[in-house]
Length: 87
Image (cartoon, rainbow, N blue to C red):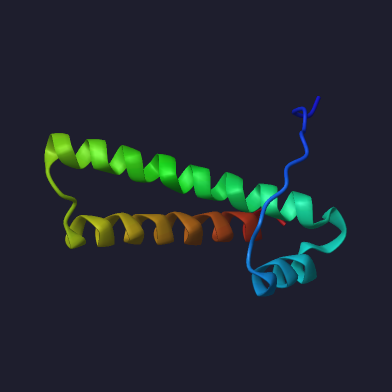
């Protein structure tokens, strides 16, 4: 069962609203905006986690970030390869 919804009134710049409406597709503007807000909340939560981790362990270095990006890219390549072999 889906979460209950409630109607809200928001104000945003017209150009942003029109661009969102143009991209929203069949799901509609409300679903598009809700998904964007959900992604922003996820980002905010991740930023809070990073701040806590950095407070405890020190700042994350550029080298650590790059190493993790490399691992993620490798995992994506392996998934793509495995998916191609499964087909």
